[in-house]
Length: 631
Image (cartoon, rainbow, N blue to C red; front, side, top):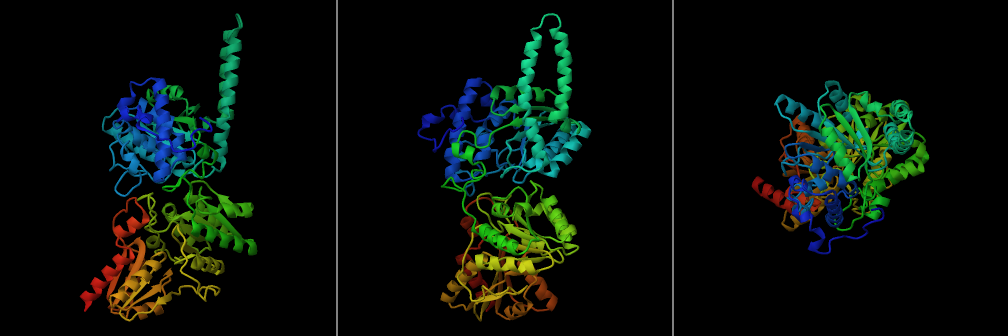
């Protein structure tokens, strides 16, 4: 299907005659191979049409159409458990398990999630969202099955990108040593979000090259088998010898050394062979890894040619949206690197998403993509800092959570100068609960020696990065995906003073201390309150740690002090203010506004802000009501 579909494909109900008859995996069982291949084409058409309209993960799902069809054809979910790593490639499974009609509302508020959710369907065996977890979860399910006397199959589908994460090897080592029966399908498309890196990626490349070996092996077998008299004995000897050479050169012994049976590599778009190999694995009684080669973006020309750009697309355009804050941050980092040869940049398989791809082009020798290995990345950055470099770590807020222990023990304990450029802070929209940057302010401010800052706009972001260059300790700079510009400030060119806040609007009744993207909301809410006769000031509380104690003492004298953040209220900026006021023994009238104590599901960011009461109108209403009650 190379160079296939270039436009949305739905042109009439007749386009999906077969797909409309599939409401569960059981409906696949009686289909012929030809019918399954026709169904694959219809699924690809539906994926392209829907994802280009709704947004979501396109290239990864196009690549696993045949693989998912084969899995749902051979196995019997929900009795058999299919666990998709990350889950961004589970759209086909959703379509085949009674959610075809709901798929038209993919990633909308209150509708179908872009990731597997146990609460959404019995066919979703485990929730997804972050990488490298599926084998551990599947092993847990397999052990539960054995303890409870079950006989069903448990299958983990993991990508080669996720296989760069250490949890996978912990799980494989455990499964191999215990010999617990489960199946791991390694979906190898040479990609995670960006091109894979590291020794494992090279190892899998060598294994993929084994297909050449396979063709040569068939030719040798065919030729020797036709030799009269000596052909068969020689064939048996040669077969044994080349099998040993294959194990040595192609590397399946890597998995078998862990106690895991290896099958492959096989063509992930050959339905007949996929079904045959999956049935063979299902009949076994040992941990088995099936190495499947797929093409990311299969069947849609643009996604085949640019799989990184079509990994995730926004609603309505089919093109990845710009991330101005990422671009601004990296431009400023490049400017620092031009002046200081100690500046280096690291990321965990996200050079494009974080914007660091531009740094990599400018300073390839000072850029390090470690794969999906956030824990390793943080400790590596600490090692670089301990050795005299000035490392900057580009990471999404939701993925930084995976490096919590390393931040405490390897970075903060010795106060090493590692700077975190934390992208996608706060609410992130349609990726939903697993991707919200809702907890970073809470856990980062717990860490001794860590400076925590959040800029209100692109101008402040630049100033914070320049400040980080002068610090000799750890700093976290947290920002939303979208950039903002609240206008020129005469102090833009001045060095930013550590821990300083800035008053943006004066008021005598109420003071709002706002963080990051919430500063604009605070300014709009203040204007609304002024129209209602409430004099409301706004302070950009750009440093969450350390706090600006002088301005906080002044704000505490207002009749109402409000903190405003797009972070979990538990332990966040508002908590920091409450703790400081309590330590001073001040009895201020404080109102904390932020994210509630629940997971925020997918939807547009504007919808999520409304749900959480963080729009300008909602903030003004809440503040006015509290102010009136204080009289």
